Length: 125
Image (cartoon, rainbow, N blue to C red; front, side, top):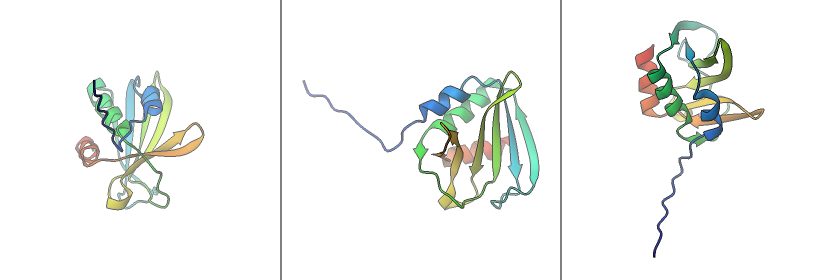
């Protein structure tokens, strides 16, 4: 019997997914879009479980190396029973810095912000 195992460079962030998968609401802050966190231009509150699940799947889909000096285009705050369970910042307006970044086990970590994730974040704005 021959067994073939396919591997991929894309590894889901299971630890992060475990933390945010049961969130009951999400707040997304959109910044000016130039990488600076100096001003919030809009805020979106999401309580729809399907949209929260879509966000969770996009954010945790593919671990990547944290890129420094990229700046941020917004932040996402996952809540469970009115308490923040995870804060995540994102950069989506720079082709070489497309990432979600967050603290995991006290260390800076990141996942890839895919074109689909950018489309989702843009549509929610």
